[in-house]
Figure 1 (spheres, rainbow, N blue to C red):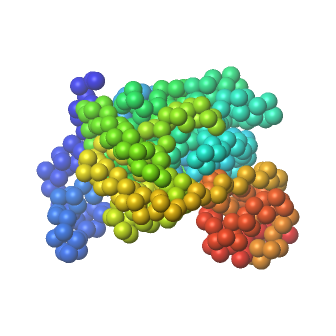
Figure 2 (figure 1 turned 45 degrees about the vertical axis):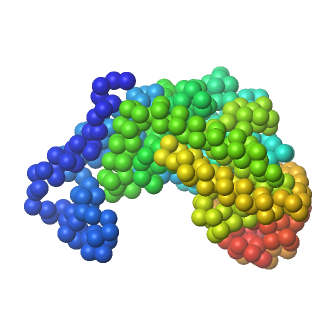
Figure 3 (figure 1 turned 90 degrees about the horizontal axis):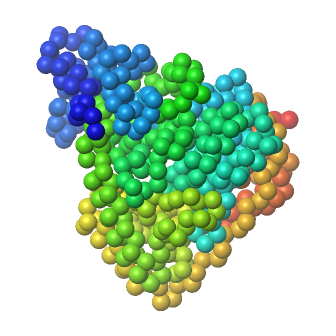
Length: 486
C-alpha cells in the first residue's frame, strides 16, 4: 500500500476551509449549524453540518476536479486497480446510466441481461441505445437467476456483430457472479466494451475468499455502490475505468448529464473516508464479514426446514462464483415464502433482512455486523422452525418463464410515444409502455416497447389471479396497463 492511501484529501481540505472560518455569503444557506432546525441539531450534534459545503477555492468542483476531489478519486482508482475513477453522488443509478449512454453513443446496440437494474433501462431512454437482451439461466432449486456465460455473449455477437457493448450484473443482489474474465475476452475480440454493474461488489477486491472484482477480470468500466457494502453514506458510489476503449471526454460529459450540479460534499467526503478505511483495514474487515457469514450459514443449515445457499451453486445456471457474505435463506421446505419470512423476522423478532422473493430472503453481512446480530438471526430462524416445521409442507415449484416477447420499439421510442391506459384483459397484442416483472424470479417478462404475447399474458395473469408480487406497472393491481396508443 502506498503511503498516500493514508490521506483523505477532501476531508482534509474541508477541515482547512473551516479553520479559516470565513464570513459566509455562499451556498448553502444554513451557514453551518446556525440555520439548522434546533430539534435536529440537539439529536445529531453540530459538526456534520460543517461538512455540508459547496464549491470553494479550497474544496474543488466535482465536474471539473483539479484539487482535493481529483486527488481523492486518484487514490480510489489506485486502490481498486483502475486507470481513473469518478465519484458519484446520485448513486450507482447515474453510473449505470453514464455507462449505457457512453457505450451506445448515437443510438448503437448494447447487450444487457433481462435482470438488469432499472437504471440501465433509464440509460437506454436517455441515450437512445438499442438493447439486445440476454436471458440469464434460472437455477431451479432456489429459483434464482444465475449468471451470463461467455458462450451466450459469443452467440449474441454472432447474431449482432454491430453490438458496441455488453453490460453484466455481477455480483447480483444474491451475490451471484458471472465469468467476467471469459466475457471480457469475447467482448474485446469483437472490439466491444464490457460494462459491469458491480453495485454489490466493491468489497470483493479485498479478500481471496470472495469472487474477483470486475476490474481485475478485464471489465472496461464498473460501477460500485460503496455505501452498500463498505463505509460510505447512502447514495454515494464510484465508477472505475480501466480501458483505452472508453472515450474519457464522452464519459465525463455523460456523467455531467446525469449528476447533480450541486453535489453533496458530505457524500463525497464519505467516499474519501471509506476509501482510506478500506485501504488501511480492508482485508481484515472483509475477512471478518466472511467469517461471520460462514458461521451463520453453517448454523442455519442445521435448522430443520431452513436452508442457506453456498458454494454448491457454483457451476449451475451460469453461476461462476458466489459472494458468501450474502446469506440466501429459504424456509420453503416448511411452506413459508420469502415475503412471509421477511415480515415475520421483522415484526416478531426485530431482525431486518434486505431482500425477499417467493422462495428466499437475502441477509447481507458486512464487517460492521456483530456476532450477537448473527446469533439473533439464527435464533429467530430456530424459533420459526420450532413453530412451523412439524406441519409445514414445501412450496410448489415456480413456473417456467415464457418466451421473450417481440421487440418492436426501443425503450426511448416507447417512452416518448403517446400512451393510453387500457384494461388488463385488452392488452394481448398491444405494445406495452411499462415493464412487468413477477416475483419469482424478478426478471422482467416484458419491457417497454415489446408486444404482449399470449404466452406472456397467461404467465402474468397466473400471478395476478393469486395476488402474486408484480413489480413495474403503475397500477399495482394490474387491473389496467399503460400501452402505446395506436
